[in-house]
Length: 257
Image 1: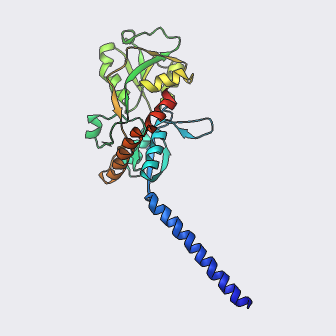
Image 2: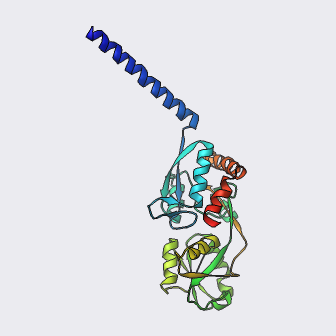
Image 3: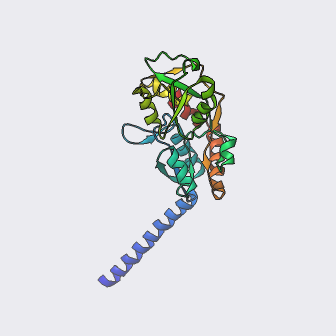
């Protein structure tokens, strides 16, 4: 009798486990089962940065999370920095990147494929809080820090001869900001919302030089391999949905008011 009961119990447990497995498989199927590796920049608040608890947060991070939830995919995040994010995508170590990347024809010609634009941004200049610099006209003989390979880098290069300043490149935004506050350079150029947000929150002991902005350009999610086009399609579809349901505006307001 004990043997018969043991057999029956074992059979019931097997059926129960099988049912759980089928339920889990069904949930995974409902979620789509797609998983990607996404690379991003470091220290580019309010778009991507590390909070006091060590979490990676920001506008880009919230937009990505909202789109992933809307479209039913998951992702692993590589918080590696601008140059490293590009390199990871080009080497096939990441499927795409979201890092406040401006959509430009030059980048498209160099192998970038962008999503629809998800934010309009200009580039501008900031100086130390006690600096007397009030415009580009005060920059003759000065040094301007930029992050390598960015729109701000291109903007600075395009006007350096006109205003007579030297461009100094850095790999990360924090290093660039520190160079300004430490007096190694006279100013830095970066995306306007990033500079103004960090100055407003007290993260940067600097001031924004009004009137130094260029024409706005849109940020886009990017891939570097045509085989990853599905990710762009998912991003675009999700972006359209979160704009329509108000989630996008909620995210922007959370960080920028």
